Image 1 (cartoon, one colour):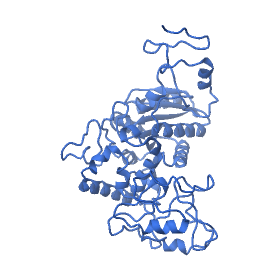
Image 2 (image 1 turned 90 degrees about the vertical axis):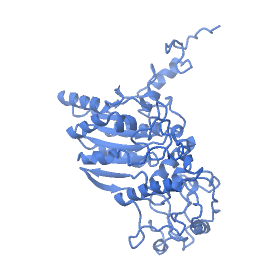
Image 3 (image 1 turned 30 degrees about the vertical axis):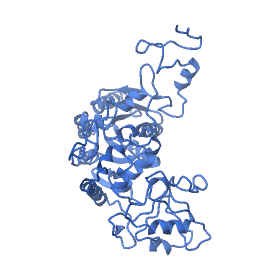
Length: 445
């Protein structure tokens, strides 16, 4: 027999039940969730999966846009994961004016809102449109191009998890080659998703000569906030493409979302850059280059490339990363401006940093030995990414980027400071780069 509702519970009708998300929510909790003084525009209590990169990215994007517009912001959301997990009727996690459009017309709806505000003479309220890669790269592609062509005053943000995750992990135009999805199974000689460059929407946006285009990942949230703030300082059409790993669709551990996003940039498959009026103005350099294989191995959607090993497919993906690195000038060179070389085994000469890397099989382990000797830390073994380095000394909080090697003791004159802002020191031949060894003591490199 169903127990009677207590006086402090409110009755909700959702799919014929009295529960909201299989629970009864106390009135005081409801008022707290709907409080406008909540610190985040996308509040807690939503139903995203554990480790969801999109939930993290959206919170930082909307908060930054809200701050940049002095609270005068209106958001338009396409159908997709973000809409579904944040607004199951009758709940909402949004603490700002928010519109839900169809799957493919968020750019058009946002353009209409911007036009209405202009007609009313409202120059302070800004418009933000959001969608996943399915609603952006595929279904809403025509509306997005129209928004760019008209130069409507809208910032459009694509949260790219590289498939239609909300409907069951089907392939989208942003799904990388060789990835296994519900509609691109690896059967026989088929490697998974078909090879091709896909739809490079940031470059397509640049071809429209709009004021601002940028890419970002949830691995660098300060960079993401900076780019949103910069975009909000401009008028006209602006586009931000954010890589947001999906543990469910990618087959990764939920606690490794940030590391996976970082590996995507470190191997070169996802370049991070800015462009204004069709011209690339800056790019985020790769401090510690890793091979594409290091990025693929932690993801079960690429597991078929290693059992049995498909070196031909891996090489093609590596070639794609190499082209990105060359196109956007992503490498930090040595003193002569030359890019860091590969070891004779064909792997990149890099130093594994905490839980974000591993020593490549057959690669040069001299770099790891040199760093271990310099820092006093044990050398990492050839284990899978993220399984090692839990024992490493992290040092005082805030002294370096998460996952980077500890700063050497200042008393040792042979050891130099780590790069500005944290990060890793890449080694080309099994020892610390000569240029860094000769740097004046105490200088930031």
